[in-house]
Image (cartoon, rainbow over all chains, first blue to last red):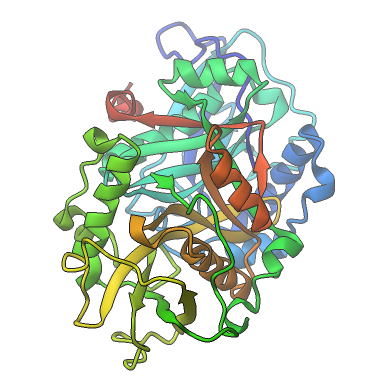
Length: 227
Length: 227
């Protein structure tokens, strides 16, 4: 559970200037075959947050709990792919509910990806990040929204606007569906992330705290109605 | 958007002592025919929170956005009913996925309900509260959970353990489904609510803040992929 944006976002998303080292980026719906890549990134996020001891997700448990509903109706994953060459395949798994979003990033130097093999889709395309989100609901608006559970960009691809691209794709989809809000959480000491989110137009709700019932404290309610 | 518990919870849920003024309470799945009662309570909650100016929910907008999925798969409402006589009708709309939970509360004095007519189900049964919740997801656990958007008990029925009964019903259902967490939010200055939730076993996450993209700031992403 976390949202992990790039710590700064220079405006490198541009198609105007000549392309010295273009990086082609695409956001598409993830599919069950992407679970291994999603799983590896969840564990990288847990390591980054020093929470790997509480990360028990496995490929099997993710596969069992994701992709059980049509996109956007329940837990949904957008995958971020990058390539040094343009995407020729429009979408490996086209879905009428979402058209992939593409960008070309003009880099001054090519990115060295030390884990490109582990995150390879094919000989050209590499997974660079993901966002996992699902519907929430506001009774005051009487409208659904989206809650973003995880936003992750792999380390070597950060600070290029790719986190913004992923989150923007969720926001655009929310607007398209007529939804009222996109919400997520941030650690109060992560000033770079807060600045990044505020620049994207988000308000930080200072007064609200999350309450969590889990583990044995939750299990204690197993026999509630028998009391 | 709010969770509004009773400010204190004396242990009045008891079936041991002689019943001077019994109040029979039942938590059942809400149905589309309950929308008017849910709508009135949402507006009472908004007034209580001095947020009625941002509460735009109507019966029509609630009816259009709730009850579109089977219970627990998306936005779900439990309704709290009370009666001075035992519930004879087991459940007006039986659903195999949830058996109503009943309690008998032994009161020292009968409760005067100044709005009993507005919240009447039939000549014996009155709506006293509701809880609206929906699935969320933890990638670290690779498990769904429930997020409680609203917990409301009508004013004259507070401080009798009925808020706890509603929230416990959600927790029990989460355990039944093998879910990992039940989460909700609370205002940081609402010390009575925080105490109540901690007594129920919840942890308050002090470091996390909610980020919200809404209104014009969200609408700005309408044309994101065309940029």
